[in-house]
Image 1 (cartoon, rainbow, N blue to C red):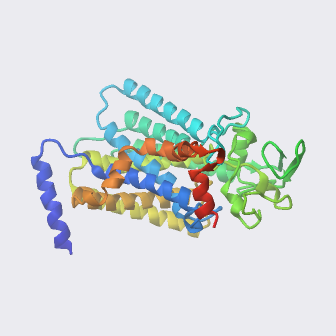
Image 2 (image 1 turned 90 degrees about the vertical axis):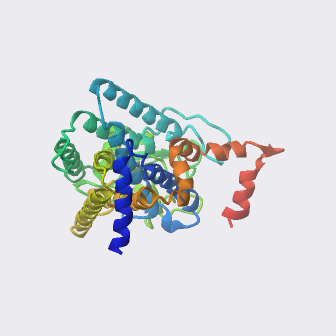
Image 3 (image 1 turned 180 degrees about the vertical axis):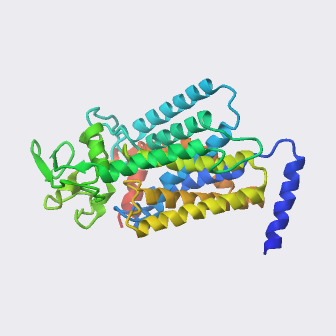
Length: 419
């Protein structure tokens, strides 16, 4: 088995040394395409197959891997983009401008401007716009990793090492992790209250509202009601600007009905908005991007396939072991909080997945098996926009017969999904 693996590696290495310009790593596009495919699968298939949808709180389902996979591959790509930086100031401005564009695009897509497939209207009340989302979190991770690569790289020509050559990157990653852990476990969360009205819930009659009280008065709690991540978002962003349908409503304490309504006799926090892409979780999301950056360094500067695979495998399984040890000692795997164990385990999973795709596509050259994913990866942002905003579905739904509800999407949903 070792001989079978060693021979194609040597053959491709010889081709690599004789070629003046190494070929583009197709595995990058394939991995991006895989991320987009998984996003579409869990978005449209999660209601049919609940096990692949987001975990209500603690736990790791397939859908919970999509975000860190996007962050990971963004970091890998940055190592290639900034392999050579002749002008740091210019590169910084371009990176900042790209991050701002990505952030604003995310606000438009997930801020509430598009009303989904059940409504042909659009527009958002600025008093209730959602400021954070998937693209916004990716933009934060992107700018942290980009600035690290532009300003803090100390690589020498003879040495490419995870720790020695880019130790300032690791200093940033450890600093972000320390700040995250300090705030998550150290901040005191007092009792808090919020008001629900007919503007945000259909449970209450028109012109009526209800004030809910959540009892906390503790620190270091990682439950949905009293975690410090939610408190930070409520103070910085405002509760009206958070995600209105948090996934923890699927917990048994909330007794959510099939039409998505939470009964009034459920726990008070079940009615509260909560943003899984919040301010605090963006710190560990940025660490995921920096970890991906280190994988990209080997891809950019090490021309040996075997060396790349050995380093990626060692690093991935090291992250996985540390993440599992943290779970054993009590740090839960939680996507909504982007806990430290979740960050390590999903980063390791992304590294293992990318290594497998690299071996399949770039080493063994089986691109015919992944050409669809490669195409999706080359157009990943466009597909993401179409899927996240439901623009493709809304466009089809806009053509109706005599009445708005007589359209193809409504027919498909009523005929197949609701059965």
